[in-house]
Length: 191
Picture 1: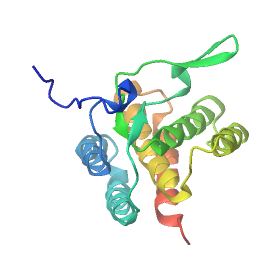
Picture 2: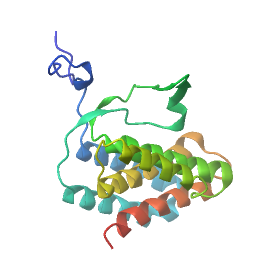
Picture 3: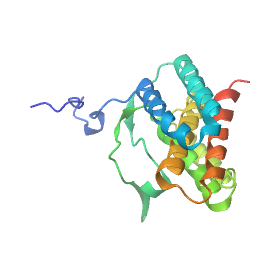
Picture 4: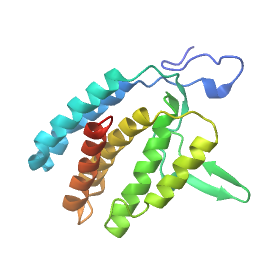
């Protein structure tokens, strides 16, 4: 009996199976979080609304991309060094999506660690730059416009994590920093 959401493997590659995830579904998920975020952070209502509008507009204007295997919630906690290699963990969100989302999500997580552990979003930017440079050097293909949009979306996701899930003592400082960076990325690209 077929499992809903799973596709038959193409050319015998198990990495080609999995549920499909789309940009419109991603935006729908972000929109679903907005009422909860506004309830806990009412002073951010206009910012959150503008972010959602900007993400929708920018996402609609992006060129098509080819879905590929993605982790989709990739963070520093999901990487384990094993001798000469690196292993990725926590594949519960694995699906077919734009692989650049993983790159953007990981860089957003590095910057998130900067703000949560050192009080400055840009504290680990040297690592971010090295990670992106290594990704580009690997020849996997890069589109800075898509990557910046996905990074903005990841900041909204991390804002939800801070305000609604973890709620650390300094969440009222961290959340505006994350949302402000998302706004900068959404509004500033191409200017």
